[in-house]
Length: 270
Image (cartoon, rainbow, N blue to C red):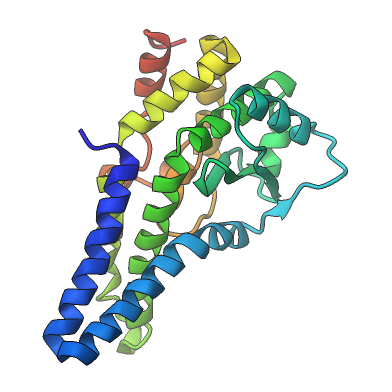
């Protein structure tokens, strides 16, 4: 069975090849050249724009120097245990309780924590969150997550752009293209990634109970205080950031918390 990263590379190569074929069919040599330029633009956008876009949309500020939460120390210490470079650490001003990670390489990733999470969790719980997000980077989940998010968000953005030209605020393209964006994400990101990462983080912490309790608590807090996020980015977060707002099961980005705890602990409830 193909892993997430293999699926991403297949999708990128297929998209680039399709642009070349389409360009040649429409304009022969000139069209092939245009298709080549579009393929280059697509790959540049995916690999160099996606991470900064998410951080900017969430108004994330990098943590440097003063760090009353001890985030930098936790991230550095756990990164050493995972034998990986220390990622950049960001904090967003949102009251919602959540954390996220982005990056196209385990050697260069970024962790994000909401202000609400830093206020709500104690030191031990915060360390569990750090460990969980670091494991996503170490497993290269963030590569698949970030690329699929960038492509999916671009598809949704096209729908918004075309709808802006429609009279009387008609929304014809968004209903068609929004599911396409999520199909891309669903194709790349499977529930298995979340289950396996939960287990790896629990092993790093040497406590499945601690991680299970943190997941349960964060899920409950996220349900009551959802987070406004860019389209096609909810799978980047530790728990579903949209809470009760997302009623469409197809568009849900995470396995249910019941299934995650069952896979992690072997039983449910805790």
